[in-house]
Length: 332
Image (cartoon, rainbow, N blue to C red; front, side, top):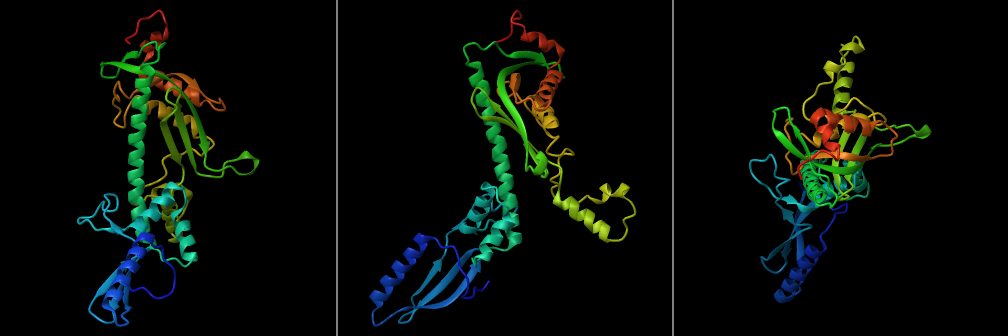
């Protein structure tokens, strides 16, 4: 797009210095009162490309406010890979890491008169970055669990693994461990009540002091609400009984729980207990990453620890309970 003369932009300092240096060197060498004359400018998101022509010869110089990068994240879903302005990627990534709302970040920059990418393009790139960050988070949790198992088995007074048979009858040897756990809602209002829609349940290893389990819940989805409003405005809404079937929409639904932030801790504990032993397909994780928590530390403000212990005991079975006795020999 053609860029006008008003407004501000984010500029890479090194790129600007290099352009001034090269342009000054040419005008000095060309002599005769030569100067660089502005010709045109093109904007690409928050990046601006400008062209300058020497007044004495055919020499032309271009200036980019930032460099263009080709990342795997920005190129996801495209047949041909295309370089993106580095400033675009940095703004979206930093807003994600800071926990800020992308619309508020764009509102801040545009309110200050700074050139910004189109909001639709920012949302597209943000969704790709979010998917990559979430996948990296799962990989890091898997690595933390592997480190927990290795560290727990190196403890001098370690009593040995829990030996049990899974639903297929195969013998499993699962690492014991100790961890602390707690949950929290997004926002608290007056009278100590939650007014948000999201909650998180976190389990931290007491052996490595690293998080080994995170369960995020959300009982609201903006797309579901928009679909419901569209149905209500259509004039065909008769009763609230059939509202749920008209809340269906395309894309990702961010509502993954029926529980609010104040009641999500206990079901999240059961989900975490299952994820410590089984993967998404319901299969055993493996002896190097599966964890059985035989010591749980919590503030005990809910029944989440009891739910966690009971769920893991249900998966392992009654025979494994006798493995806790110091009189029973277990595999090391």
